[in-house]
Every structure is written in C-alpha cells, then in structure tokens.
Amino acid sequence: MNTTIKCISPVNGQLYAERPTLSLAAAREAVSRAKIAQRDWAQRPLTERIRKVRSAIEQLGDMNPEVVETLAWQMGRPVRYGGEFGGVDERANYMADIADAALAPITIEDSEHFKRYIKREPHGTVLIVAPWNYPYMTAINTVVPALIAGNAVFLKHASQTPLVGEHLAVAFHAAGIPEAVFQNVFLSHDTTAELIAGKAFGYINFTGSVAGGKAIETAAAGTFTGLGLELGGKDPGYVMEDADLDAAVDTLIDGAMFNAGQCCCGIERIYVADALFDQFVKKAVAIVSAYKLGDPLDPTTTLGPMAHARFADTVRAQTAEAVAAGAKALIDPALFPNQGEAYLMPQILVDVNHTMRVMREESFGPVVGIMKVKDDAEAVQLMNDSDFGLTASLWTRDLDRAERIADQIETGTVYMNRCDYLDPALCWTGCKQTGRGGGLSVIGYHNLTRPKSYYLKRT
Image 1: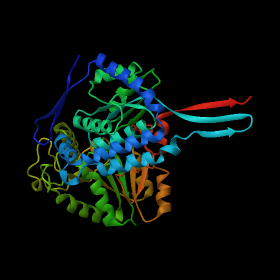
Image 2: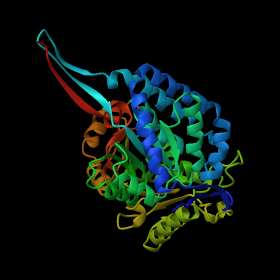
Image 3: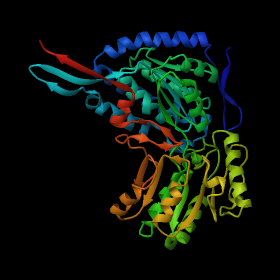
Image 4: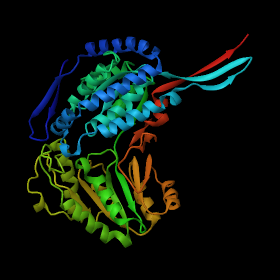
C-alpha cells in the first residue's frame, strides 16, 4: 500500500513537502538493483571510489545556499548558522583520507610456505535511516565510508527532512556514483520492517529514538543482520572548582541551546562545583536571556523553532512538571513574547533533582537543569544515574583528574573543556539505551565491512 511522507514546516505550520512512498514490491525491486550494482561497485579500484565520493562532497558544497534555506523550512535551524557543510566536509574527507589504511588487508604471514591474511569485505547493501536534527552530517557519517568500502547504500531519511536525501542523491549521482548504488528512498515503517525481516540488507545503521531502535531490532530478529544504533541521550556537563568559568558557561550553554537543543550530544544537565555554582548560573542566565527567538529565515534570529510542535510540547510538559515539583525557572517568559506552537522559549532550571523527568528523560529541546555538587564522587554518581550514555563534558585545568573521572563515567565519549563536537578520528559510539555499534574512525570502516580470512598454503 502506498502512503505519503509529509513535512510540516515548523516555520508556519504548513505543508512544505510531500513524497509518495514505495510499495513493498517496488522497494524489493530497488533492493535487487542495488545488490546487482554493488558487485560491480565493489570491484572498482578503491582509488576510484574515493575519488567519486570526494567529488560528491564538492557537489554538495556547491548546493549549500539552497541547502541552508530548505533546512530552515524543514526543521527550523536559523539561516545565520550556514548549514552543516563544514562538518560534512571535515568528516567525509577524513574518512576518505584513512580509507587505504582502514581497509588494507592485515598480513599475518607471507613466507615460502604460507600466505595468511585478513581482508575487509563489504556487507553488500547498507540501509541508513537518518534523523532530521543534523540531517546531512548524520547521514554522511555512514554514507561516505559505506560507499568507499564498496557497499551500495539505501538512504531512508526522516519525514521531517525529505529534501535532504534528494540533495544527497543529486550530488552523488552527479559525481558518477551509479544510481542503483546510491538510492534515496521514501519508505513507510511497515515496508521498512518487511525489508529488514526479509534480509534485504547486509547492515543497518539507524539514528533516532529508543523506540525506533527497538523497532529496528525487532524487525531484524533472527536475521543476524549487523546493526548500528545511535539512540537517545541525556548528556551531562561537570564544572569543577578549577575550571575556566567563562569558557565553561559559554560552551555548555551553547551546547544546551544550539539548534533549539535538538542535538544528539547536546548538554541536557549540568553539575557545578559549589564554589562556582552561583557565578555559573548568573552568567548562564545572562547568555540565554539575550537570545532572539523567531523566524529562522531572519538572519538576526539566534533561536529558531523546534522541528515540530509536538517536540516543543514535550519540553513544555517536562518543564512544567519540574516547576510544580519545586524547580525554579530562571528565564523570564516576557523576554520571549512570540513563543507558541513549535516556537519554544529557552529555559534554565535550578533546584532540580533526579526524580524529575527533565533530569532523566531525553528533552531534546532548549531547556537545561543545573545542580550543585560537593565533590567528584557526587558528580560521577549523578552523571551515571541515567539510562543513556553518549557523551560527557568535564571542565577542569587538571588533565589527570579529568582522566580519572572519565574512567568512571558510563558513556561513549568524554570531552575535557569542550562539548557537542564529533571528532571523525574517534569512534562515535554510546552505551546503555544510547545504543550500540560505532561510526567514523577506523572502527566505522570495520563495522561497515566484515573480516574474511585467507589461509593459503603454497605447494
């Protein structure tokens, strides 16, 4: 049964884009084309695959002015921030740079009698289910290494950002990557589940909600299909008494509020040493109070709408519950008279605790709770008191202390004196309900391929 994917723009609440989904039969035919085309693609020299992927990224860069405006309409990010191409370019070209080494065979022995080695084989066809919050960067994390490694790619983008997959398809096809090797597809949830259950893919990478990750796992049960899942987050920051206070406030508050708080590794809770707590909070309130909430197409806007009104309603409910339970909201609503629907004012909460949903459940919006802590042990206990584990941000001038604390935190990445950044040289991964697997770095290539061993005896 054919359905349609609809994007309701957060800018004005109107239908912005609509696309028909593929029927199950048409989707299966597309998978068959991908599997046939992948065999030829994998046989092409690695240098050719790298060259074509680099060219595709250049093509995408040329499209950036159009991309920036359509992103504002689709998910609300202000045009003043210029889109995502800087991050796309950094990640894509780093993965291209390391491809030779990451995919090189591991030689065990090459002697008079034996040749023994391990090769990396592509999985075949990779399904990438990408989210709307950083729709280009999150897709590129897997698209680029998957193609370079010799896989065909099926990209299913979020319904909030349907034009992103189309832009990527234009760029990759213009660079000479066969249309059957890179396919942007519009699929219903039911059709996606049927394809996964039918072993259509050699590997699946999903970025999205915990519920979505569970649905992917359920569909894949018994197929032994490899999965990479990046799910929810409730990332903490910890400011120690010896931290650079101004840098900590500026960076952590930006990490909490940028993109209307809709960041996978955004800061959602902050723990501050007693000695700095009052100063930290005062500076944070001053920063947030100066934001301008409004039309993302206006270059003076610093905070746009959330991607959908229902996302804003979730944050409103968490905030209201916290205040009813004793939390104190520090940002004056009078500073943001134009809020409503998807337009949500930013908020800072103090007098919060871990019985409140706003400190335990993913908010994914412009709200952050700040708590006072007495020492490292209490901070570690609170940071680990979470169902999620994507990143943690530590603020101190003492590297050894940061490393000792980092060893105790249940998370995928630990930052010292920065946050909300994805280094393509490091594995992007998480633990607990944040998911499993890992992207980017050499490990990203390893997850997008399988090891194949050769034991060759010379006669």
